[in-house]
Length: 176
Image (tube, rainbow, N blue to C red; front, top):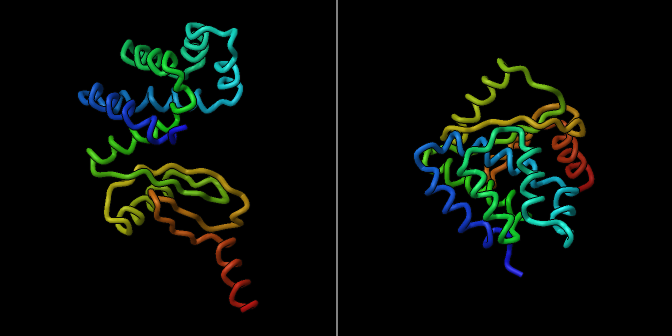
């Protein structure tokens, strides 16, 4: 079977071209569809041979956190009719990559052991934009196992200043 990235690419590119006039609005509903499609129970429901494509569409449209415009509904129907619902998260990721490439930005995920207030996040984002030399779309995810500090992932680059990483470095140095 083909890789999900290979399956998702034509969908993401077509969606990007079709929504080029308003990428920000499209990004909102694509992200909402991605979150719904990542639900394992929904995927199991859609794989049931007794469930029709219309029933799957109705469930997804009803669960989505945003109102879906007509273009989103047509896109979702195409994905469902072609049996590519499991590729929807990858389609959304590739769409986001295309959108970021056009705007000259990247997605950055900041993993933190504790919640970060908005002022501190703005300061961290400014430092990261300077460090990575590009505009970043920063999101925060909590990971208590980091103990303290942060771990930043931008594409395939990782900046790890967490206490957990430092303890691992010390462990390697002491056992070497």
